[in-house]
Image (cartoon, rainbow, N blue to C red):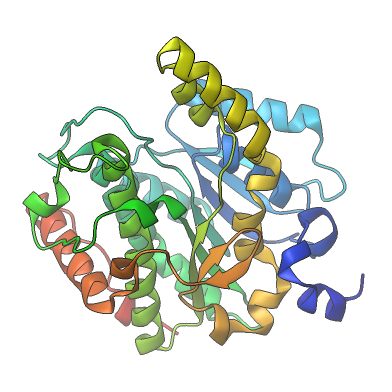
Amino acid sequence: MDTLGLMYRSTDTFDPQDDLPSLTGKVVVVTGGNGGIGYATIQHLARHGAKVYMAARDEAKARASIDKLHDEGLAPGDGQIIWLRLDLNEPSVARAAAEELLSQEDRLDILINNAAMPRGPYTRAQHDIQDAMMTNHIGPFVFTMTLLPLLAKTAAEPGSDVRIVNVSSGGIAFLRRGIRFRNRDDFNDEHKWDIIPGPSLARYCRSKLANVLFTTELQRRFNEAGTPIVTMSVDPGLVRTEGVENDAASQPPGVSHVMSLLIRALWTPPARGAFTSVFAAAAPVVRAQMERYKGAYLQAPGRIGAPPHADARNPALARELWDTTNRLLEEMGIKVHDARRMAS
């Protein structure tokens, strides 16, 4: 297919195998690529020639996944896959991981914040902030903001196409209205009374709402600075990842059986579930129509839509989240870059 065809092919029929250009020379970071959507995202991008860093905590799992990716084949693009140690549950470690990458690379074209802690028990292991908000929002915030100088440097080069993709969830639609991020207590909301979707899932969705709001405010600051970076949040849809299947298996026997049948019948396998992330990261139409995609919320496989929650569309809440995140990080002794001062 010619370049013009690649640019304007309908997002309803997007398929990375046919619709991505060569990514040779591009440097990409994907967080949480040991399995599921992240693994498939890395596979799609590396097969088109990208040099991809798999940013993950567990070295043994990461190296086993990289070996598996090589066994499954990276042709025709023959990209590279490199492990980068990253623990998003500790902000200082997330910053150190970004600094390690800064010391290794002189460009960064694509950052995909894919890693996330799934729903689980309520815990506040680090800095008295609940784990879901720490791992799914604060860690990625620090990682991204530490990488900004390299992203901005790359964006300033002629012909550049720099993108930040934050993987959210359509599950935010089930959150109650009136979510706030004013202080530590708001970050630590236990959602005790959220019967639907339940406290555990509500806490996860709260962190995914933060991903959308972070995207909105980051793009606003890029626009204000004149920095030509496109940020997008994506909803991959219902994807049959290992985590989802494990969650179903952990339910009572009768419930577990029914859930497993429904998941296998109705949910998308990871290779296809990654399409939305891959579209946001590398589809040519995003560069061709940058103004449409700046700060956009994408639904599978690459359609621009409205976030399915009123609070996710509130720019004042996005600024509140940003300011409180920075204040909490200052209390931890962690300072990050200001997106409005990045070189354009």
